[in-house]
Image 1 (cartoon, rainbow, N blue to C red):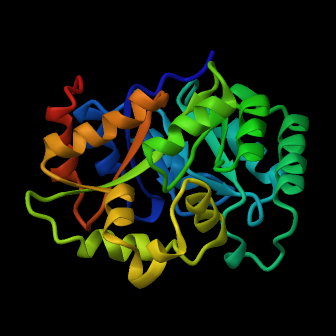
Image 2 (cartoon, one colour):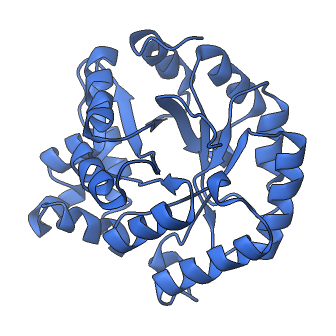
Length: 274
């Protein structure tokens, strides 16, 4: 049985996610808590969020395959899943080549890492894989519960669904800024961090964006596509685009130091059950 995540989830860097915040997200009715920033292999901080909540699933987005040994992660997975049955989904991925001196053939690394998790009896339906391109997406569909694309648009979601077919989980992340009259400053600052990273840049080019869109922190069109900005109603309509394109679930990353007010406003518009 695949863990039910609902239509929308909370996505935030683990270092900025507190147990109290997790409890509030659960109360608001979001279906899952995604934690990024390469959680450590001991999964202690992830376990603290599960301890602070009652039923909401927690997903790593993602544990970095280069930084954490598969055997360490597997041992931690079994501890956490044993204490919180059916509430922990292990997201894994290869991260950015620019941040890893040992980086080599990514598909070879993914395959070897998943082999090791298999050997350690981590259930495939309790894992998701960070995936953007067609080969990684196919591995996600064949060897895990599904794919977790990051920094994408509904157009990529449609492409990913076509690649993986019906059945596997497709759970993209999308960034948002709730402002009635946004100036793109916060959005462009975030987007610019990723435009020099080959995996994201190549994926955007594959999706039809050009080198001109990467200049000066990103063109207005690119920034607007990658960061939904506007009123809660406008942002909700943009998020719905992923579901219409074939996503099962969308991890919403609200930008800013204090995201809870925005998550609260979005929960009302998205008609969550909190």
